[in-house]
Amino acid sequence: CIWQIYVKLTALEKMITDKNQLLDILLLRKKGKEPIISLCKQVLTPGEQNTLQVISAIFDQVNAAYREAITNVELKQNPLKGIFDKSCQKRVKIDQSELYSKVFVLFLDNKKACRNFLMSVLIDYIRSLNICRLPVQYCICELLINLIVESKSFYQLHQLLQYRVLTDSKPLALLILSLEKVYPAAFQLAMDMLKRMPSCGEDVIETLMSKKLLIAALQYTESIGRGDSVSARKYLELAQNSGDKKLLFTVLNYFETRNIRLRGTPEFATEEYCDKFVQQVKQLYQ
Image (cartoon, rainbow, N blue to C red; front, side, top):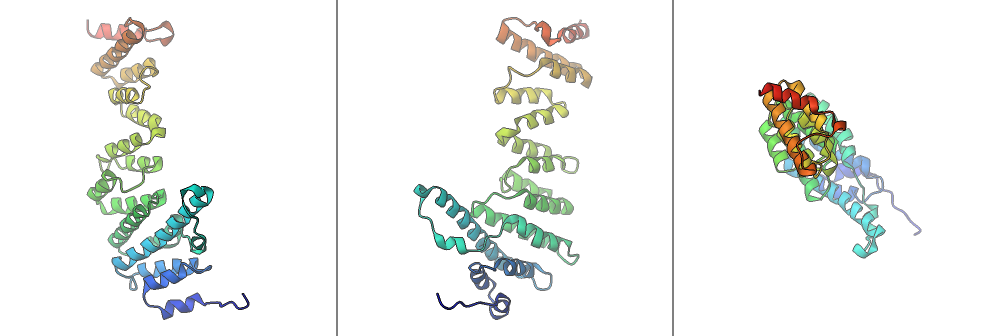
């Protein structure tokens, strides 16, 4: 190649009024990332903001380019899955964290910005991510949930979680769990999310135990195949400390039943140090 043409991308922004057409061009330019970020800021800026339809199309274009890049990497690593497309390598890739830090957070800091509009924008951005099969990163979920809590739109939060619009993650589940005081249903929503993640079994158990939901904790340990290995003493001590006589009796009965199933006798092994709980229950119900 003897000649090269250098295009001033800032000039293109003034020449092309169609935002989606402009984005198609910028996605193919080496130095197109900053102009694209600038375009995203512009369409959200109060006084200059575009319709949600235009913004939605921009999100689809950006996320489709990112999805293509990920697919192409997978194809390069495993050619048997399909044909590697070199043209996709040249497209600009914009990650969720970049839009979060350079666009969404700045928009949130703008006092003139409408919170409900940003909420709609984020929900649409998540819609686009889901369509492009891109997991929603925690930073985006956190920003949206904070806006929902601020506006007290808890029904909307419930819908997003119930229909699993937001990608499951431990940090997200813990964030939802922290909302229990302002939205009681958040506890069950958070627990459902934790239970869907195999690596969070211990978190589910510890959370249930901290709430003194000992029977629920024991039932959960059984459901994940750990019912025979849990410490009887640990649960009996928590039941005793709760001051609930019925709970102590129920927990003791659970472990005595387990002993019969495992060893053929309701008695505890000496090293389990559970005899004091047996004596206490006998005294309570004499």
